Length: 195
Image (cartoon, rainbow, N blue to C red):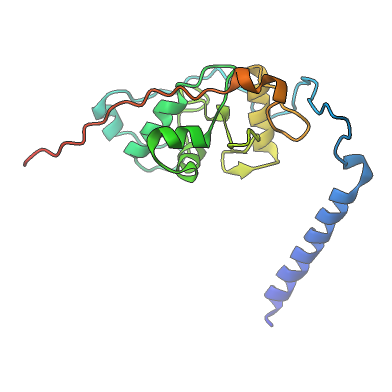
């Protein structure tokens, strides 16, 4: 077996055992009370901005020439459809990848991929307001579950009044009030013109 493979396996094994030890630590166990709603404490984050407005192309010509500042590639019509729906989610409310994908007759994963590279955040396309279908905080900027980017998403939502429980799901007592799913899908022209 090549030496670099042995080193990689050893690194993975040590990381795995560290993670297992970390998860077993008694101070990190889940709360036992029946009410697991977090008190709204201010999350620590590097980027909690929810006010910056990015220029957003509205006309067909602007959209035809729009380039994603993160990828350097053209923004696709599907991505614009996702961004248009995401822009409808009001401050203080959330939606899910599934709600958006259902409105577009698409997949949750495709919606997540479009939002992962959203060049119009935090406004007018507030992708931090989109969670997974179980109302778990989900992903943000390509990161899932835990980490600095997720902390940023949590802080943005905190500033908008969204409360999470100890398991990073939207607090049960607020779910009815914060879920948004009333998307207005714009009709697209599907006719093909003769050249």
